[in-house]
Image (cartoon, rainbow, N blue to C red; front, side, top):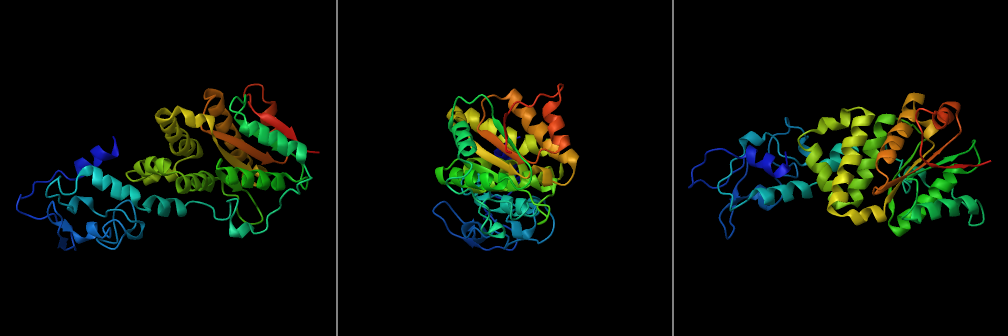
Length: 317
C-alpha cells in the first residue's frame, strides 16, 4: 500500500471540528490556515523530542512517530497527508535505522581506512583502462566485472583507485572493502552498508527506502536474498520506470576482498545474487565490480555449467 494511503488510515479518527489539531505533549501555534501543533511547526514531532521514548518501529531518537494511534487530525487542510509524508521523508529516521546495521569503515573515503593503497599513475594501467572503458560504455555486454588475483598483486589498490575515479565523476554508488583483520567481514551488514551509502547520495532512492522501512523495519533482519531484492533491485526498478535514461549512466558498486567475507557460503551467495539479477536485467542502473582472490570455491562458481556467471573476468598475475 502506498505510504500516502497508509498515513490516511492512521488518522481516521472522529474529531470535533472545534478542536485544534493537537499532539500529546505539545502546544499549538498559529498558521493562516489554523492552529498547528508546535511540534510540527518546529519539526520536533519527527525529530524525537516529543512523545513517548518507547514503542513503535523506530526509537525516539530516530525521528519517527511513536504511538501513531494517539494522533488526532483536526482538518486535512491544516496538515494534509502529503505534507505529513514530506515531513517524515525529510527526517533521518531511515539513516538511524541503517546506521545500526551497517559496517563502518567499508566506504572508499572512510577515516578507518585512512591512506589506503592506491595505484601509482604508471602501474596497472592496462587493467585500469579496461575497467574504465567497461564502466563508461553504455552498450556494455556485461554488468559485472570480476577481478581475480592472489594476495599482494594490487587488487585493493585498483579497487580504491577506480572507486575514487567514480566518486569524482559522480558514478560511484557504494563500496564495501572487506577486511577480516579489521572485522569488516560480516555478510549480514553488506547490503545495509550499500543501501546506507545509496540513501545518503540519492534523494529519490532515499524516499523509496523510507517508504519500505517505515512500516517494516524487519526487512533489515531478512536473509541476503530478500534484502538484495527488496532494498536494492526493486527500488531501482521503480526509479528506472520513472526515468529509463538512468540506465545509461549506471552507478558502480564495488565489493573488494570478497574472499575475506565471513563464510564461503555467503561469498558464493553474493556472486549468485548479482549474477542471477544481471542475467535477467541486461539494462539496469547498477553495475558491479567484484575483487577477490581466486579461491577454489569462488572459481568453482565461475566453472559451474549449471550456473553461468555472465561477467567480464580479469585475472592479475
